[in-house]
Image 1 (cartoon, helix red, strand yellow):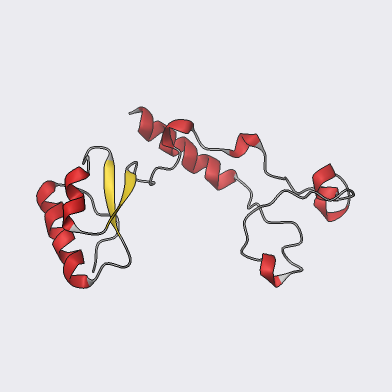
Image 2 (cartoon, one colour; image 1 turned 45 degrees about the vertical axis):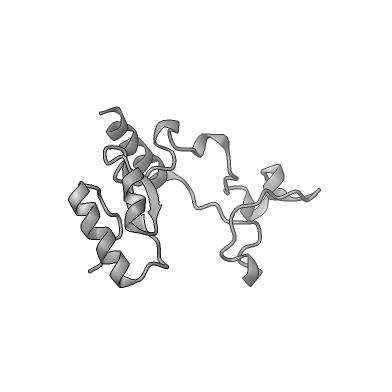
Length: 129
């Protein structure tokens, strides 16, 4: 019950969280899809948090994290486990964990994994078809 509440809290927090883009991401193509890095320049306005178009921008801060109990979980509330073959399903706890079939797995083995998961009652996060 507590996990469901915290997942709702996380969803609400993520909706309000700004998109943290790297400094000067709009000027350099190579920075477009890069993750946040803290500006370290001596006169950098974003680091100093004042002036110009950077005055309204919010740098990454401690308060934007999700609740610790649900951090890293799938939105459905399960912990994701990557699976490569049907034998890997034996180690899965179906109450807490869900399966994601690796992208390198072919169709024949994928279908075998899905059949065995259905048999064991394990949720597959990326089923075929």
